[in-house]
Image 1 (cartoon, rainbow, N blue to C red):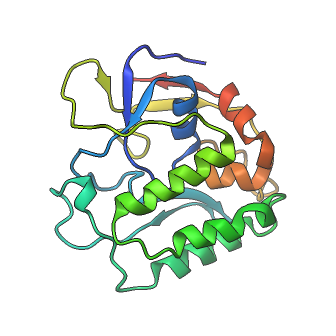
Image 2: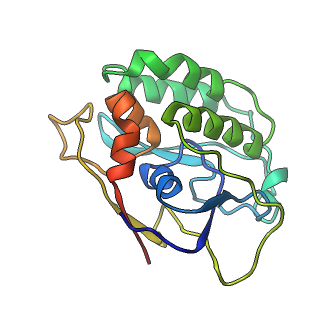
Length: 207
């Protein structure tokens, strides 16, 4: 593993990737509640492995969110995105070994009609943390600009964290090679109670 001595401020996440939860296990972390919203990130999207390969599920947000504090960003319900997300998750993981153990609670979280992105993601994080038996991670009390704070980016071309993760059987192993760093949903549906062991055995690199 790669242990980082700095304090790591993590963004709120929508079923964050494996690297996100491995970071929590291996490092001193806080969840950032005082930043401005940043688009195209794990704050409102998550990568799952579908029959057609990796896809991103993205929560639509109300207009004007780009420069808003994360605590004020509201979810848009003009379209039935929650039903679309659930349909995609069922299609991707309906045959996974531990699907039946977790799907009802996952559906309930997605269907909660939370007004804010912070509220929804906080509920999701609490559920995943309990499921994985993770230590509690405090929220920030203010936005800290000091140089000892690290803020890794988990998705996209500006990604600043890489992982080497033990492989595990994914639903579409017969079609694709192992696809690393999918949503935490991919891990829990496929390996269930072994999820924490895989997170602990994952090596992280920050750059």
